[in-house]
Image 1: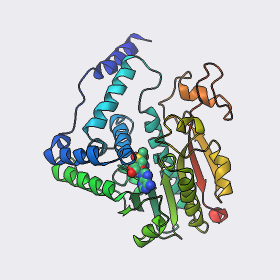
Image 2 (image 1 turned 180 degrees about the vertical axis):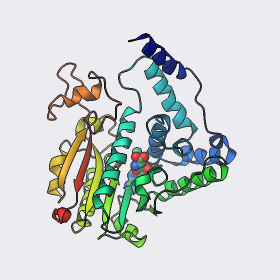
Image 3 (image 1 turned 90 degrees about the horizontal axis):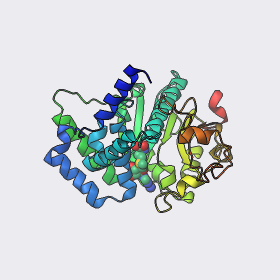
Length: 338
Ligand SMILES: C[S@@+](CC[C@H](N)C(=O)[O-])C[C@H]1O[C@@H](n2cnc3c(N)ncnc32)[C@H](O)[C@@H]1O
């Protein structure tokens, strides 16, 4: 390491000794009380939305999401900040939150590519299933011609709307504007059979070009419910230009917490064609399209995993389980290229 590099590194490390700076609006009484409701009344499923928002807020050197901190709330920010600080100071190869950062950037880039692939073939839709505290409608310029649907539990969507309202009212110097052509919030439970009807009632048109975004949702569902969701999408996209974007945990990843995670697939690239999807492309963290300059150490966990056959369940060097997260893109049906 050169003298200059060592200096830069020590500056970056010393930044982690400082206190976390919270946005002013986060400490306002109203926002505090909304987050107190989240803490007291939401289960782990709903609260997972705040955890992912905290990741985006604290990886803000690579993800520009100015709404993420307020959507995440103080306690999730503090807890992740502490983990990241420990990782930085101990020179950990994988800093907490890096998986989420890479995942977010991968979905961002694939959403943009999918929209570009539609060209000028009429209006298109982007459906975020289990949207949580996602703020893409406010941050991705590629969505400016998109009709965006956010599907999640009613109480989550309500509090999200209230937090955004508080932020808009408070931000005097920083304008918060929606970029998407329109945004429709659809309160629905994906475990119920009627979520697609709810979506249609709110303006979703099955025959339109659609990007389905299933980010951080499938593994929270049971096997039955996750398969039903994938089947419903397949049934509603046969005749149109459709792109499915989803992340899948493998079996070893789900076993990290069997009370939180349920559905897994070791071979989503084999599963999806059996449900009618085609053109399936699978990436692993660290692949050329899924590292974004954040996973360059060849010895980090993800690069070591990529070098092992996917059928291998435990690492030959240390016997640890091969926990993988697959980032998968597929399209709707044979009419794709017409
Ligand atoms: C880990 S968060 C991911 C949120 C968002 N996709 C992101 O990446 O930031 C999972 C989200 O799925 C939602 N969710 C879980 N089960 C659901 C269900 N059965 N119906 C609707 N939403 C659900 C939760 O409320 C939560 O917002």
